[in-house]
Length: 195
Image (cartoon, rainbow, N blue to C red; front, side, top):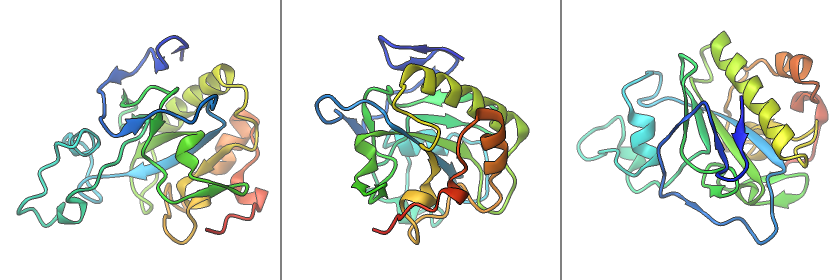
């Protein structure tokens, strides 16, 4: 996988611009990768609803499956679909709105210094092998492009927003990532992550 440093985009991904983004603080480069899980409607895959949500085009009117998302403005840098297809919404040098209220290693507002990667899935179902393969290739490319992303700087949404978020879920295979990427598994890091 290849990241174009000039554009902040991954070459293998389709690009669909999200308006839910902004500038990073001056001089700030990515230092953290946050892995998320998402499905829309909950537990269903495909259908384009995630892209609609990230581009503020999700119709929530009169649809009980989506009414809790009315007015929500979120995004991620990249989505890895169930079939392994990649869609990028925000350039990596920009701030995506993926983490919400969050803290990592004593630093609040993780959106300022992180990259958000969404896996299409749920806490209750296993992610697919192709998704892990793509995630690992993307993490390798990101760590090569952004050296501040160290071996202890790949975490789940659950680790930076404990009690508020549970994704990518208890079934996510952190040990596989630790083994294949030579990173420290966040389950064993025991960082103080209180909000």
